[in-house]
Image (spheres, rainbow, N blue to C red):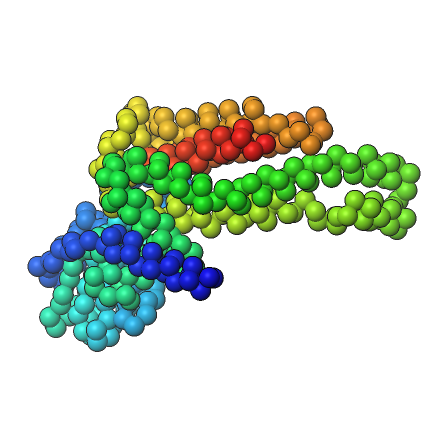
Length: 374
């Protein structure tokens, strides 16, 4: 049964991946020796045109790779040659410039990443949407999510393919597809979420029983005597001093999924220029009210979705109540949640609307889960 499930998962991945791959590629009539034209092409067609702020600035990055049987980062600041059948790939957020020219001399400037190529041989060049790289070769497809560890990159591809699959069978807009996708992910992670909640409740119950004993021991004893009594107090309740880590470990299981979803939402060209609700473009911040100035780390617009996301988190925190914890412990938990809400507002504020909308929906579903299963 386990083998059958594994095979079905692989078949599902292959099926939805084929749906995610299109047939678009742009063959270029480009003289790669013309450095000005080459770098202008990278600036206008490969590099993300919107200037992101804060942690979202990574979406403006351009990366250089060498691809043949494998993939490696291109040398920066040193001249090197392209080998036979080796591609130079210049990867932006959504698109990749592919160049092949045997024995071409290449220099990528260390300061401004200015690319210069010298070759007397014929060259091939294409601009390709990232989902279409698989049409060229499996090796070129490795460019996608190259910054992630291989298992995490695989989960990210599956996340993107699942979104494409949901859209293909529902014919919903991309906005509604992302919201439905958030529901699907929440349902898939529901057993882990319930396990985390129950673990936290158990920890709160044990802490409520343990704290008075520990306080008494520390007030009367110190040194080895206190240590032995503290260990005995834990043992009497059937736990170790590390019992508080269990909910954390359960929560950490969900982190790779969150990373995968965010990376896929950040690099899907399908979301570009897709309007939804008040958003003009799901691939950019929602830009509810443009400003005439830029705020450090936040950008130059008032974005409503991060504020809505924070409101949902605060609402969840207000109604948060651990019945197994003391009043003081509940206050501590709420204070941490308020602090997290503020931190996430600052971190998520400059990110694309699609990413913030997913997290807002996930928080809303978490609030509903809290009311149902607490």
